[in-house]
Image 1 (cartoon, helix red, strand yellow):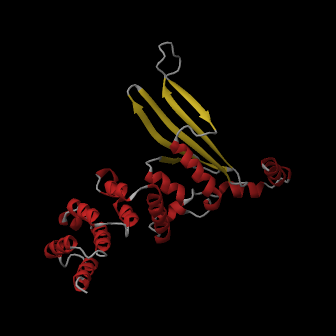
Image 2: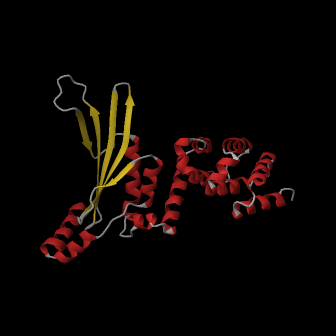
Image 3: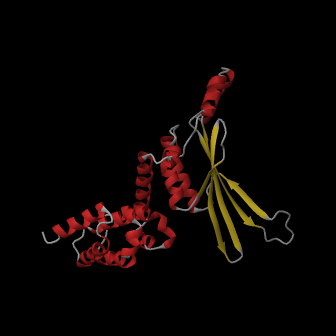
Length: 267
């Protein structure tokens, strides 16, 4: 099948001397599927595009980070190449290890393979197999996202939420939520926790997020209070009362969430 695709490319672009089409296709821009972008964001995978010029393929460089234990250090990377001329792609996995040999010539040992070396590379490869040709298009997703186009942001958030729900238990989500390491993803974590909380979980969240913190993080506060408003719970009632007493009038949406909660509490 691959040979036939290569033959078709040769016939179409080279033997057919279709230079204009070749140039036009090479100038088009490929974007990674939002599912892969979300995977990188969630798993702290550094992502860089390697082709910022007209090229018949697009390449991305994924850095999985380093693993260290004692004197052992290894870094994993993956390169994804996607053709603009045909429905084909290639993955190259690699690793680098510090060379401890006293007779070494090179400071690092490097390995390259089509097969993954660690779980992170394997999971990325499975995601690429599933989404790369379904999701790669000439739509400028990144441009839309960074220009605050709502649809692009909603797509990315929905995929991040689904990945967290599938890969993490409820307890893990709460640990992440109450951690400074994941503070930039609080909003996404709350969405992933929706309708999963019990009384103990509610107590943990109420204890961790003070009224002062909420007043300084309004978007997060609105989402947290909306989530808690689904639970008729004495601790939630007091939490809402304390916040309302100190910050009433600061945000209309939050005032409405709390007022509705009080109105319906004894119904």
